[in-house]
Length: 305
Image 1 (cartoon, rainbow, N blue to C red):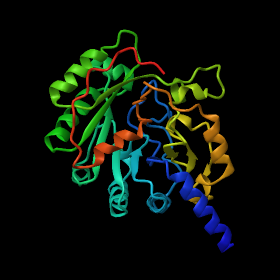
Image 2 (image 1 turned 60 degrees about the horizontal axis):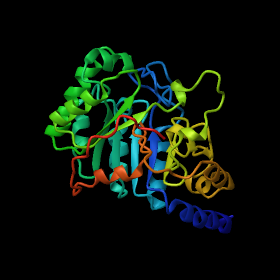
Image 3 (image 1 turned 60 degrees about the vertical axis):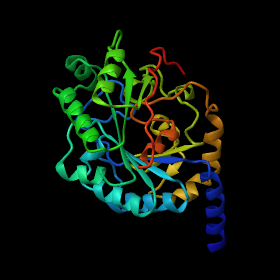
């Protein structure tokens, strides 16, 4: 048994060598009901079956595999009462941390956690007009709250990036970018809606792998609120195992993981999805306090994959 476990760890270490970050969906609950949500989270969604101890064990496993970063996501990660503990666990293990939040409500104690070296924030933004932003989020007042907390994060010197998803016809994407730059945001990317989760086509039972950028399974791993492991939150329909039943190392070293990785088309150029998952792990570089922010050129509005 010991020999088998050692072989599994060795195999998984080899597989994990190319993985740059792991998305941890620490809750399925969210205050908003975005029409394009890839996980179908919302106020009535389940928080998931993963316990606090389950998540702490997974964070430890990630560090032991040599994966350098984690992303705390959801649902809405700030709704988990254990988020500060998860952040501390990750930092103590030597991991960089990104918290992807809608930033509609940040309780005071969380700002202290976000200000710690090695932590950065990410959020989504949709328009410079409150009514258009809130049509997409399904949350009255979400525009002002998110905008206000973006300003708060910048004033506190917390590294921040923002993703804009082009959801509506004639959506004010360019104006939203301009507003964010005026606020002081330097890292902004635009993506199209991915046809998974709530945005999936009704007639399609299983989404197409063409909706994926190709970095999942190769550079990215995701753990759902119920412990299911896939390549990223966009590829939740491709399940490799469950961390409540197997250790992460065993899953990453399995034949199933290799089969799913081979089934996903290789990464393509000019395909940087940056919705609530951000499939480009290179962006975790911003979690390094020494990272030198460089303003990005205005992205093309015709983002395709």
